[in-house]
Length: 246
Image: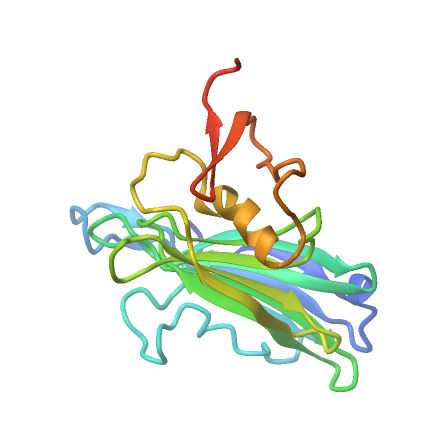
């Protein structure tokens, strides 16, 4: 892999109607030795994420800390994988740049994942963080931007609990009038870790989640995932689907 290879380039000026010619670029350095593999094994290089207002300007804001946990840089604080970079619109008048990056893998296959959304601050002529969250991979945790439906524009997060009965903390963040996200819901899931439900946790929790927000009530059509869901049913508040068409 050549050093500094461009893996994403987005002209932001038109979509965000910026005062300066802002753009986003992601470049990836040369492959590096895999600290967990044989001497000849390599993993993708470190990714540099950059907002700039012209070829001579410095990158801002500083995106090097997206994967830093608790303010302490460690072996998983650098992005090696760019999984998502795209413009989304939680409201018709409000574009955001959504970025998802991941660290190198750990010895157990886990990764640190950061999801960050940026808004344009017209008064400051700069990009600012509207939402940021970190999760891992190995315990069915997830951060999801909701594209459609009554939760359109929200971020839903599932993170494992640390005590029994082992389930998930479900949180919903919605955008405010100032373009920043704030938590509007947090509860302990009906879904239990390892209960055999093949649905993603956010999908199995969607009826209960929407019920708590006043967006769904029993007797209405169940909120279903995008994947096929045959004979949907609620079991102790958790959505289950049959793997086979009845």
